[in-house]
Length: 170
Image 1 (tube, rainbow, N blue to C red):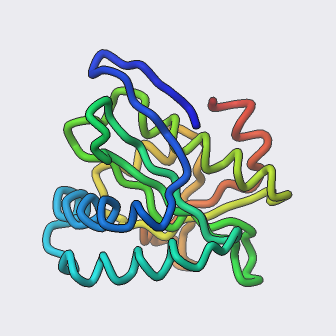
Image 2: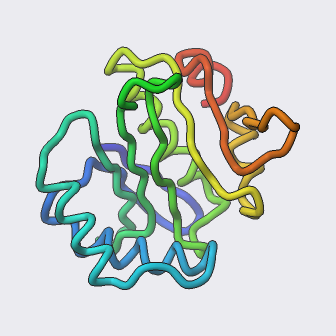
Image 3: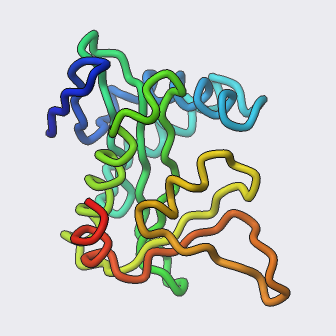
């Protein structure tokens, strides 16, 4: 568990547990709508997160960002790849808009990368959205754009050396 103090107050980052499924589901719906608009219902997200967190799979983990009122305001999900070219997958990273740009994204990304490194993984990727207004965040912390053979960017990023990303960007 990590505690962070920002001008918004005190926050905690901790690993999510099965009991956190309802909070993450609500947060996932809200943050997805803020970022992309629309999205799956709360019922669908609750089913997904209940399934993910109840498995207790060490290769599929989530970190939760919680404010001083014990309200979830952000989360990440990391998954070990099933043998593709990258080792770790930053499957999700979302923060409520009202808490962005205060160091919480940096902190929760750091914790997620640290977990992958502790697992012996050296690289990670994420499949994002090319029009995401927050893509600069990934680049600021060492993510390199993945482009198609014809040079088009579709929202994917890769970190080829996670230990170096930790030392260079955090």
